Amino acid sequence: MKEIFNIFPKEKTDKRKQITQPKIIADYREKNCLVASELIHLGLEIEFKELKVADYLVKDIAIERKTVSDFITSMINKRLLNQLEELQQYENKLLIIEGLDEQELYTDSGGVHPNAVRGFLLSILLKHKIPIIFTKNSEDTAKFILILSKKKSKELPLNIKKKSLNKKERLQFILEGFPGIGPKTAKKLLEKFKTIKNVINASEEELKEILGKKAEIIKNIIETNY
Image (cartoon, rainbow, N blue to C red):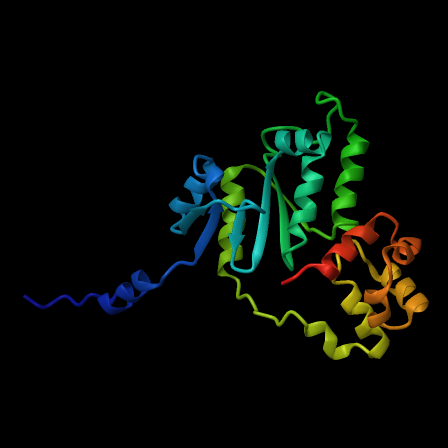
């Protein structure tokens, strides 16, 4: 009898099995949700930890996940606003609103006008600069996370923007590192005090002319020991 050769070499099959899947960090409160079980079913490794910010960390991306009902509730009690602010600590962040196949997003049944929801979504995109993904269900959410986990992420230096800044922009960039100081406020401070040294040495009362109540916070940071 002639020997039958296997056209699918074992060596190639073994190599596929040896490919290590990326690890997903998930908040421990996600342990019993369907998304976590879907991710495991898709072959991803999940490590559960207590995350102070976000529900999932996928490489360099922080993900906050909300079901439609949770999104509406956290919008009403303003809990989501705090979470969006906390997400700003990450360079790459994402909000997933899950369950469009299971619950209507724009409805008056929850006591929120549909236009209020639309306005809040626009605020997330334009004010907080956080992309939003709408998913049909937990399975759809897991598939998005799977695709994100396979994308190559670049490790960028924190001061990458400094390379293209001129002298004035560099000074402004430094001041923008303080909480609550945006581009306009930083520019006002430099126009008044001229140098960063003068800003740091300014009294709280002098800073209040531009910063208001934030002056106390900035002054505390300046005077805090490492």
